[in-house]
Image 1 (tube, rainbow, N blue to C red):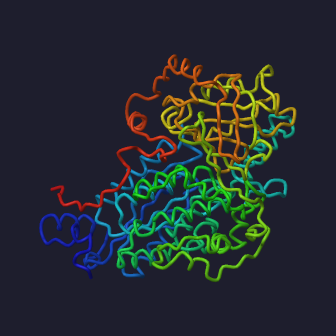
Image 2: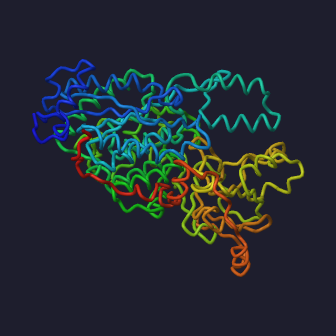
Image 3: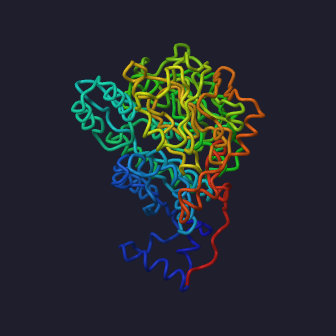
Length: 569
């Protein structure tokens, strides 16, 4: 057993401090020999009954433990903050950085040599990765896995995507409230994350594409026995990673992020991947910017899953999952190291597509050149993004007058007014929903279509905001406008009636108001008072970076790998 292993600073000392560390652990029934210097593996668990996506992680933790014991390690499970995307107010994104702090400091303070990150729900995966990357001990991910396909009236229905669809149908009088309630009971039929290609499944797919999980991690359903087997194998592998000293900094290179960007385009992944990858890159010291996401612009959409397609994650799994997608990307992939120690190309060995309507071949995609588009102009000097694969093609090149909602409360109070002065061509603008403004940058960017237009059959309009949208959502929605309105960005100056030009092909987002007028408006603008004046939320507002920098806290960027030498007694 290694005498210089990290855990020896806790459990290897034959003095008062070593006595304390070992003795109190022994009250759980651990024998002397588990403190003999073998790798101690932390199992970082975001299980919670308030996070339904992660409600199966206690079971998966047992699988990881089996693998760690089998490989000669000592597994110790510990909890961290759990972020229930569908349950938290004002938004789980407000707390992603708090989870990252929890993970980072837990790993640093306890005597572990490596860590398995058990997550899945939208913000738990990036939050855990950000925290682990800032300590840079060997780390690997096991995701919750997606739910089984939703069912309603004999048809498959998808998390989130069909919520938005059904809600609009109820507003239009095309669906009864009783049917709406019946669909609610059939949508979520098992433990696991959204079974659409929402943010949770997107992040699991990108983790696999970056080599931070074992192959097939992204798509195996939460209740599939193969996920428990994968957890077991992950437990074995993390012990080997400790022996090899294989750390996140060895895996999360610029090339790995480029692979993630291309994979996100190929799977029709969530726009939220942008802020999470940017924040993670900041932790590992990789120079990643919005411009890098243009790499995905010419990658075709290969995965036919909601919200960009018609199938669900269960179907994606049975069709072959991420190994097939990586195989289709072929030599476009960058050569990078993975948690297996070898190259990412090993992930495609033996990959075979079993349904080429679910995973399309590269030369017969669902949509060509469907990756996220970065937009810039005087309305978004630091950038904004749009997801063409989920948008209406005709609206990606558009110029029209704006109708402005100053706050989310303004929108909710007025969106269904029969006298709202909007047409299908109008561009809806929402302010006050950025990182500082809301705070936390919520998923409200896919604003509802005005009620009077819904009744006319309108199902998409251009919508612009400093907010995010759910990865399960669809529509011509321009998001992450930076700087945000509450930071004094041009978005704060937009008025109803102003004309706006959108050109996805040219990457342009322009407010067609002359600079003299904008200067007058800027001089008269006053920021909205902050919504919080104490606690974590105040710290967040004071220190959060803008969306184009990943919305991390400014003092968390980077890492600290120094050993902890001071004792508590």
